[in-house]
Image (cartoon, rainbow, N blue to C red; front, side, top):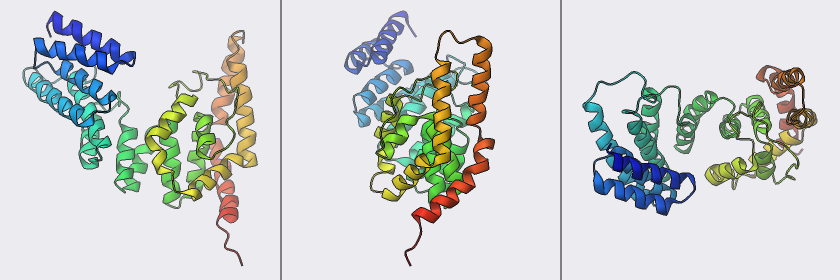
Length: 310
């Protein structure tokens, strides 16, 4: 990459970070005027078009980025650490961008194939595509494959809410309860929006317990923009989640969780007390602890929600 191309690509990236895709598009166009075969410039141009909602155009740009990035790969030895290498990283970014475009264009087979390839090349999942692969399978009607992917994501609230939904469809109600309980801990704003409940106020965000920063109201809105259609027109799902949320065991856990958070964000909390409280909060949210009461809660809710009138 020449210095001039690098300059315009950096400017374009800065505009993208500031939410200015039109200005970014102009920068990447200027980079491509200097070098029409630069994969980073095509990738940046594709991202700008993607942010502008021009999916067909973004798809074409990412396809070109893939072509030129692949050509660059053929000129060097393939390293074992794809994401850590400057030569191979543009290929992964282009593959990710094209996968997103195919996903939103409802070309789910294409998207799944690209996401699987990304995970083979970068198993640590630096671009967070495993959640998207699960959602792709779910939209293809392959609930079992979606479930397997979401089980591997960890404490991502989006994956946990969708995992609870998938378990519900599979009739695994105790597991659905467990996934939703973990999801509620990870984002309290989202459960309120999904169940039309009162949004809890004064719930602080604390990186020590939510290191990905996905516990905010903004993250809840982002999930609804992307996955809200999985819930609309399915009132039984909403009643199931609301019943879990309002169950006395769950409410008692949430009260303790919020007390923990409000204490942990205090700047003058002693280090020893902080470590102790973080440990208590981790134990409160642990799978092993929740599993002790998941079946009981599921049994009670099934008897209440699914009882056939005599």
